Length: 376
Image (cartoon, rainbow, N blue to C red; front, top):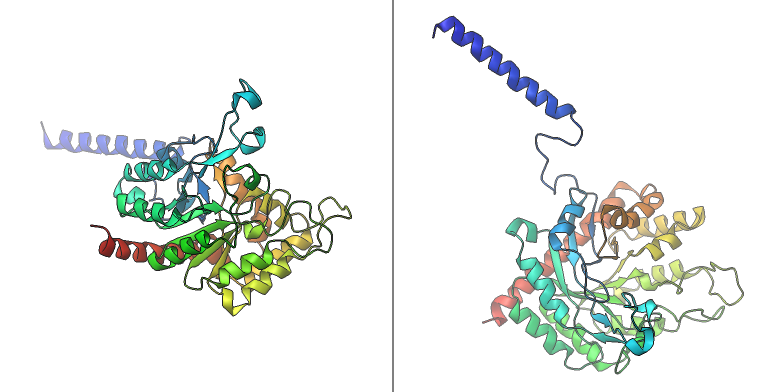
């Protein structure tokens, strides 16, 4: 082939290649490459359930796809309670949620093995995005610590914390078979002592009050909860939902006379300034909590002011349960946009990402060290 023709063919080939690259840039949904998931994260998720109340959920790789580039890291846990399907109660209707049946709930310890297996199925890079948590124990059982220890020994290199586990929860606590969990139970103290020894993060759900509390009454569980937290200064504790619930709310949403005053922020701020509780953090997870925070311009500004005043003590979480796709998963995060817009850049970064990474990075380090010494 003549040199001139070779040059013309090479030039033509170059034009074709450049045209193909240009086409990729303009065709919807087609990109030459995507940045790694850690380059453009919006938040870390401190509160995520892979499975639901009948131990069904989504595949962990499906969740990775939902996380995409918007979420850098996430906790990973199931739900420690199984809703019984009682034919005598609901006949052929199979309940999937605790509000769909009067049948009891019972502790389901296999959830921890399921979560560990899902985590271990991932690549090293994929595992780095998750912090699995142990949840399948009964906090009213003095043997609960032995379960947690066995899980760590059976699945070393996996878990970073315990929870979300529940003590007092509206509609749930009364449905659980066996002894009712209590903030004053020594079994719970044993759990928190062991978590402090190992370095496990503790994510605990405990309502601050009973449902439909009497106006002006002190929140029923507040004193016991503060006493429990103060007894365990060496544990890293996250109080889920700042103690709120579906009907355990911070303000008079119904404007009725038998509702508590809007003093919840004051209660939380008093705890944040208490030196005896400096090891306690709060997660602002769950769409129910988000609705309270963004209910009015006043609640938005007061919530933002509290986060700005204590930027190191709050973590964002979705508290979504086996979401069917991206829309239900990100809805909780998007509900907080009015608050995000008011935060200082420093607070915004800490609440959405940095606090999670500081707390769980330290947990990973400490738990792996405990395992190095105690797992043989």
